[in-house]
Length: 616
Image 1 (cartoon, rainbow, N blue to C red):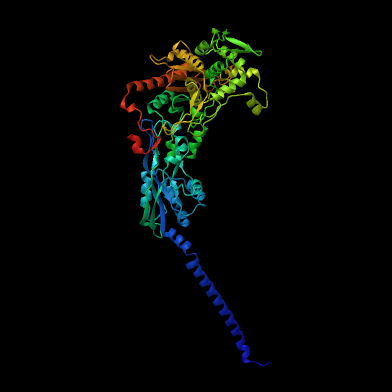
Image 2 (cartoon, helix red, strand yellow):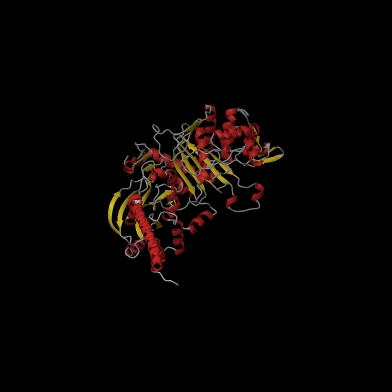
């Protein structure tokens, strides 16, 4: 074999060429990468770098206060701190999670769940892990700023609701926005924000919440603040004024103490709600501070349903209060005639079934006036038979039952006025004439809410002018309240109101609630919850008759309407009428005293600044 020097030099030369190519390609790739970083994506990476050294801390705008019609504060704020967890460094968060939970008194499992739920959000967005921090919580955060820089404090103005559950269902409550709410809000919500969840807080949340500010600070590699770049002040939420009269509200609330029921007080001239109470109630401060799952479960499982606003959501048989609807329909249609009389022996038979009057001894010969004054069932059984369910349903709807009033509160229920079409639609059965007899005295499938009955009776007393109930104080010259006009004849209004005057002032069913010198008119009602047959086999408050009373004053051109429901109260005259009497009395005492604190505010805009509202 012959060895040649050329063969020995050929292999190194090939390797050198390949290495040169690789080096050139790598250099080109590096140059391309540098060019992309420095030229193409310079803004993107500069922004990411800023996020590492610049942190935006929200400044939460305080919610607007809520005042009564005279400028008295019903709901205000108090200063508080929330604890924030910065999530710029996931490793740091994971390392100190158990220590943070222990130091703040949070269940580690709950804290890990909070962090896990926020995993899909941008890392620079902090997470509120504890609201209404205690002095011990604040001390823990401040003392661990060096070793746990992920923790921070956020100053907020937190809601302070009235004590003793006062006006809980009207005012409602707020709750912290969730990470999901923040993600869906397109920048509207920030960590630490709260939003209205029920009542006025929810209805007028956009007005009350204001506009948040922010502070941009420089942080070091460990997340510690080293300086402030800029600050945008928060704009406080707007204070709103309600039509509520705190004094009447407290009378209603006190009279309902220990009962299940509701009170609604309206000004039929404007539709303004002067008072609205519902019992049993709940403490909204539980929600403002952050309600636990155990507390939430307890509220929802409570058999007395404290979260239910009975004033607008309790759909119950109206009982004999419905006779005012029947009387109005009778007079407007002329069926069976204005001079119609019935003999009441204590019961009557219709379609082969005996229907009893509440007075087993009977009322004797009864006309319309006597039937209203003494609430004769037999009279209205006969009127209902002759009117028929179609006419009854028509007038009940026109007078405000079976439909929502449109009050500015979330969750209002419509009640129910049965009809032939309703039964066919829901039960696929025809309407039987015998069912009309029960409907005629406010029983059967008929249901109504306290707000509906106040609205209906007030509209009838006003001659067919139905002003929509509302809680936000409105200026009648610039903010006219929507109304429904269903004209009633002067004779109809006169006979109905005269009958209701007799209920209280002519020895009628509510004679014990008569007020000297006040033309107090009303109608009592007792509505069965179960049939007479079942009453003998069951016991308990929930099976007792519900007590109703709806009244107004004065008889002509009424200024105030009161609707009262006491569940399980049995007799409207004994359980419900005295509550209405107390409210009417308080209203006239204030009106007659003419004290300065009771003088209506001269500046009527519904939404105003806090200073203007307190000093109108």
